[in-house]
Image 1 (cartoon, rainbow, N blue to C red):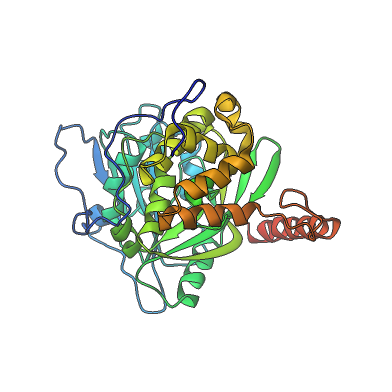
Image 2 (tube, rainbow, N blue to C red):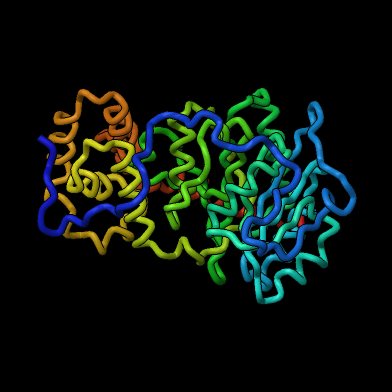
Length: 380
């Protein structure tokens, strides 16, 4: 029998329809070159090369076009850096779509200074980050699409690396290319390598930088739009919908973006709550107690679970064994549980757990980070 909700077990966030474990059938509109008229009359500007010069970027054989989507509101302090990082790409076949949410801090002035390098720029009211991204995706003409935050910036060879990986994989119709990211936090920088992306990600809350993901238009068609009823974890939900849809995945353990900590994602409590909701909606037979027990067993950011300590099962091993037996009849859940478990597996003969590197591994990781840093300096 599934565990029932009891004292200390937080309820999952309510709202939104159940997530169907299958792809939506082409929920995106037909690809468009520009947005239709603003419904509420809030549009302030519509500019860019598509409007000013009637020029729409196109892909060519063996020269894939890479589209960057930037959604911004009041990002005057950082958006120029993002714009310049797209302009300075070593790969010549790039386009940039910018959706501004009626900024009032001078962001539009910055955008207009660089409008000659922007393929499509619009400023109008929207319902938030993910609603704006849903407007932006159909505007993309690239073989690969990447979301670039207004306060982040690309490495100079980001598009070239993504295009090379895309061609090496056979230019599949439906594919994700996961890349690493430099995490910028004050005076320190760390390398964020992409985790494995599979069904086990529902339990671990897949540790992947959304801004290091390059998706084909076919992957977006298979997964469906971003959920607008999630405030922080809609990108995680989108990644997992790609898994459910059978989208192919490649990993590129080289950084393509400088990711700045802060913003909406810094609300770790809300992020965990939304991860719990996504897990529960994907496997609706799980009780609240089972959902929170799974997060305590597998969530990649253990310190983020401290506010939910009361929901931790007293013995995780026994909890997982009972859970596996209780839901052995669901093949997707059994696979997700097995994949998440192998990610944490420590064999007695290994001597070193997954969270404790050997001296040799530490030395290799240190050398790799130094090489990446030196390479980044040379590309500036």
